[in-house]
Length: 329
Image (cartoon, rainbow, N blue to C red; front, side, top):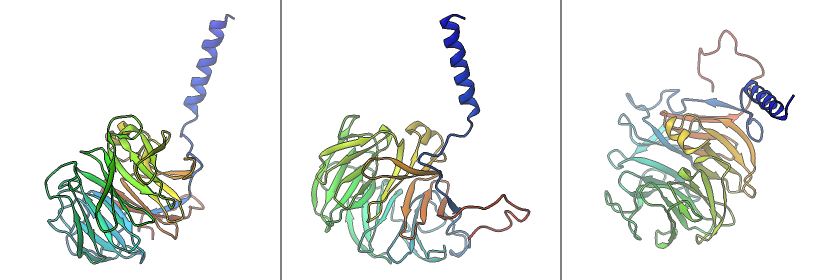
């Protein structure tokens, strides 16, 4: 047998073996969780006729109350539930052009980004407006204007970072009181350049992690925007969440084309080592936004119109005849 025929035979065998492998393994190992797929709508405790539209974000405050930010017309855009999904209160009707980001700060205040009207709002827990950044309906790139901002993050020292994100390509840093401090970034593919700054998170040492989604990477900076390094192995990251003890979680997609083509349906939740970027575990989930609670629950805001509540657990056997008769707890 000639060398050429041998090489062709080996390649054919490799292709055949690859085709038989079937499902790709979960990076870092499968994380074992159970999911409630209609948190906030089962049980149905919202006012009559209310339902979610496309859910852009979800967060949980220190009291364990769950805040949902959505784009539907049949309910207030910001709705609050208890930890089991029972309606508590809501606000914001007619206030936002297009809901996007949502975070609870360490003091329990609620921040949102409106990427339709180019604004950021800070509320207290019951919806009192405390601070507004940006001018309604006016896009810009100076100290007091944004162009479709996406996310908010809080430094341990109190500063606030805004990813300004769809129109602009930058991160903007403010004081806790909302005073402009600095900004960095521009359109491009090089270090410190962005193509859709979709999420931002800050570690306990002040290191800033930025989802450069359409460039399929996470870029990492010091607190003042000095480029440190980047990770290119995690796909097109939708959202980054870092716990106070530096546990990092992301909701991501294989690449930016898959993300847009599948409209976030083909996502994965990943647990990531914050120092090395090593994937510690993964599991499938559609999703646009992620929040992880101290008791290991993971809340996902999905553009499918759902909030997913994932909690640790795993089935011990196959489904039985009563499967599907009622939703899980």
